[in-house]
Image: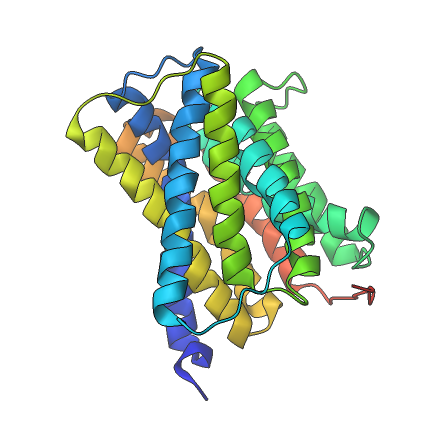
Length: 305
């Protein structure tokens, strides 16, 4: 058994990745504050996001090349473009704008619904899985959690709606990744789509009058951290998925909203919302929903690629 298959090591790396992803929301909001980015300045927000993912793409491709200098280029331009649009450009347009209009705690919980949307896309859009009773319970549980977070109001705030849309885009990209990586290298694909998606975000932002971040050195450290976060977490997660069943790894996704809430409370001083009873109940429903989805009996539909 290799190191990447040992349970203690899998747990350690998976929790580390989830901690990185859970910290993204509050660090993005920190970046807004340090660079004095106005929540209404959509164009500058997109430039900020684009710089992060352009750097992340460069890091992924550079590290992959350093570790495997003889590896052949095994990705298709069409695959890179599709993922750049859904996984980086569309997802993070919605996510960054959503964070500008909601709290880090609320975004962390809503962000935990990505696995549920991915299931719905896999079952009803790409037809690669079949819905089961446990998965249906998980989907319902996740959306009940969102309603609780919004005090059972169907009139969701703008920030919540935008973060939800980002998770829909992420779900589509997850299904595309599953399809593309049957024949293409996942690390190269990630690095290339990060790079292209980041450049698209920068271009869109600049064309609409956005400006590059300017502010204290601490703001640039936050931006570099966000880029490293994406590069490191994705690379490690890909290595885990390469050596282990998907169900064994994906179950750790339930940690992301939980960790995100506590990191947001610590970094953004959102203690009142983090420790409100609605937050804890919402976390219970969202995390429980993800667990139902990932531990239920899996029925896959074989697809042609």
